[in-house]
Image (cartoon, rainbow, N blue to C red; front, side):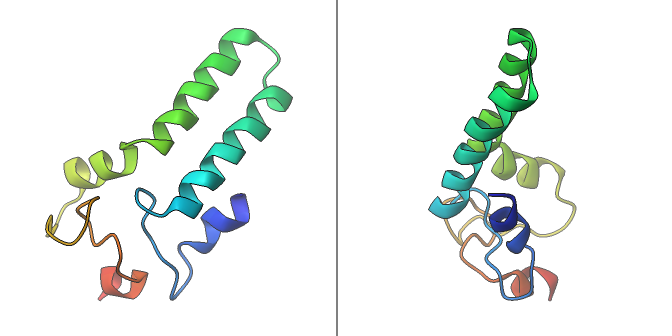
Length: 92
């Protein structure tokens, strides 16, 4: 799962953390694999689960639209930030 997520930033990789079903699936697998083995206390498991579940939702879209300093084209896709364009389009 971590390899998939890290490969998104590679040249020619797809950069949409909101729309790509493979990314959402990888985040879900990451959540189910990390939480039981890394956090012993139930309260910490709940917090970690909430953070990772939030990353599966609109977190990246909201972060990009509320923090991004520059031009955002909302008409390019469901997430509103060049969701189906390669990373090269974001850098150029």
